[in-house]
Amino acid sequence: MELARTSARVASARPATKRKASRVWWAVHQWVGLKLSLFMAFIMFTGTLAVVSHEIDWALQSSLRVAPASVAGPIDWPGIATNAASHPGVAKVWSMEAPVASAFAVKVMVEDRDGDLFYLHAHPTTAEIQGEAPWAGAQRILRNLHRHLNLPTRIGVPIGVQSGPPIGAQKGPLCGCEDRLTLGAVFALLAA
Image (spheres, rainbow, N blue to C red):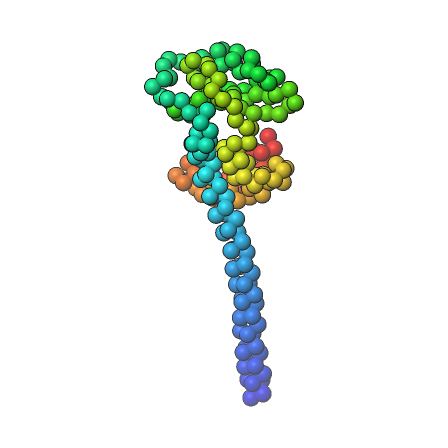
């Protein structure tokens, strides 16, 4: 009889300990889940804005706008390069970006004599320089914020990349791939 009472006490004590442990894990799960969900929502929101960052720049910078009817024929790349190189204050032409749509100007990244980068906006077919813009426009800020949280690249990219595998590792049409991605594979791609 005594053995039955002792085993009943031990049996009733176990569930209380298990309940307490499960409550602790549930609290940790809620706390971590809330923090990660806010972080993931931030990454997804900035990614959505980064997708339309060209259009945001177009709306904010009038020199980036071109009347689509005025664009006739191919882009005059040599003329744009010549006009950008001879623009006042330009020491070096770094790159030229093709317009993303017919209402956009060509973006020319240039460096001034102090080594600072900025953009010139040129009409695609007339090669006329329409204006200047800072290097840090909406596109750069939003993409840096999304890609590495505006932290130094060595710190921010690994943090941002760790949020990718839960989304990008889905198998099938969601990610457009047949193989699962692993965090190690993502870091290997970054290191390459």
